[in-house]
Image (cartoon, rainbow, N blue to C red):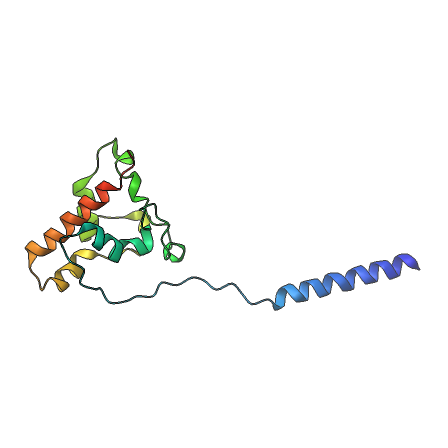
Length: 147
């Protein structure tokens, strides 16, 4: 008789526990808020990086920015680009990625904005200013490389 009461009590407690777990609100999936691009001065790669890149890649470039958890794939650790390229910083590749001219399978559905057209829009289509933005941003990212 005691065993039946014990088993019944255990079953009731398990059912109550399962019910409590089922009642909990599901965890919210982080989302990225899309905002219009701001016109950050093109002469400062650091300022552009902080305005356009740090939200995903982090201020240190390691891919741990505040929006990183909402990405389908983690943002690239920008400090390791040279290390992953035989010690040479891949200037042309980084430029192509920023402009949206490089295929990035790790981005899945391309969470990373294609900055080339965005830079063109805030530069009123002046290609020289777009190139200056890309060049200064590429140089700043180069300065983040692990030595």
